[in-house]
Image (cartoon, rainbow, N blue to C red; front, top):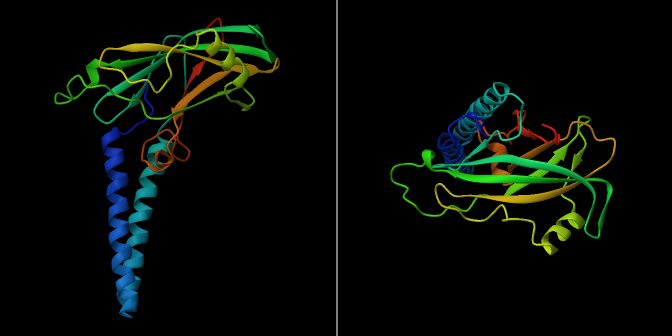
Length: 228
């Protein structure tokens, strides 16, 4: 399974929250020790806090170094772990165009059709058929030189005017359901081997062990060559 994590999502989140709680408790005890002028105890608490933080950062780095970069071909799915279930994303199609209605690209428009699927095989037994609203996503296209390109506002306005943008990425869905979303990127003519990075945009994910947003962690991208 191609995933945005290489550690079970629930384990990563609980480790993050648990470490934060331990550091908070140590911080409160440290504040009391300093107020009471118990400096020897305060020193021990500082060392304990540094030990906990060092262990956490060491584990995060270890999982990052154990990961690797992946580039998925057309139709291959990237799974996003949502604690008790998984959403799968795949690139369905890519087409290039110089113009979209009245919008003209600075270089060339890449119109990407992305499919979102709620994999019903990944839900926990107690979850039921309730809807799931995807976490906020971030999207960017990178070329082989590492240059990043965000979605074209002009191109997206044109798709929305034509009612051709599909469903927004934050649309809720039930187990087994899926939908497609159209996205437009304006790439210069010299952009080679473009790939799409779809990941979570929430800041805390940068500090979760095994998450692809964490420091030095490999990322899973989608190949955008129209012939792929």
